[in-house]
Image (cartoon, rainbow, N blue to C red; front, side, top):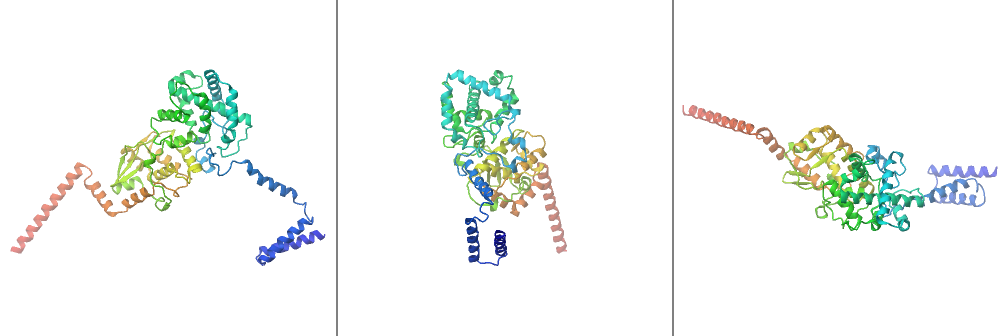
Length: 467
């Protein structure tokens, strides 16, 4: 009875404090009373289980990777991005790394992995124990690359890294030495032109990765003597350059590539000497006129000779844009690079995201798409112009932007050009009266007729004055 009464008094005081009727001294006194009550055993054990549960909850965060870990680079796709297109982030034929390992839909390719692992053992006549010990020594570093706790046991995790890593190295060796069609013929039961391309697309998915430094460790033991590549980075870049039919703009020796999704991003980035100015100024990155509006204001669109998508230029009224090739597989690559930048590069110059945001402003309707197709800037492999506009509009959904835009100057210059009335007047005159030879001839004829009529009118006035 005494305990109940005392608790009621404390509760009453708490309610009084909550209503704002106590000063800080009284609040301190109330805290002291609660402490004394607990230390004297009154209700001392009543909430013990709750206290223990709260402490365990706080300590459970120790199992998570360090929030400031420099090694963390492989992430789960955020929900707000995944819900837009689940398939764009999910491997179609093969799992790499722990996130999708064990998926029954991907089991057929596990046989291909084991086949390549067996070929590796035959080729190098190597003691597997050395590989196991090497990965064991680096296990914690590999685990720290993933943005969530990996639940696999140490042995299972090491086995996964070995099988997946050796498969990638051996597969890339064959692609470089024999070419894709020879690889397909040799593995025709599991591989065909479609599944081969699907594997290369799956390797670019953010959730489907092994860290490159782990592959580099395995590469030192798996290297083919006749192979010209001194490192796994070199082998991977060469393979992607052949598949993309494009050279990497970055100096790969100076650019740290963390995994294949990061390598896919590197192919979009300009060389370091062409990097646009980087500043925190969202003022000009919240609005841009569409391509058709800019065209009406006299902006000339021209396909750039640059092979780097992000190398945009606007000088003297001419907007140069590198050719944009859009196919069914493009969305997967674009979405995963954006997801990587949102998770890993958002505070460190997310250039590809800024580029996509610019495109979503520039292209909003099929009319904009048609204009850029006619200029040779867009190659449409998606079908209709509506499909291209829809693709780009959806691509920018739920993507934060404007905090670190690399294109602030470009936004500002294009908007300023459109808002200059002289440019609109000149563009209208040119479009309505001088856009074709027939219109030029008609305009000249009308001008001559106007001059003749004016001359006749003046002559008539002179005659009247003389009379």
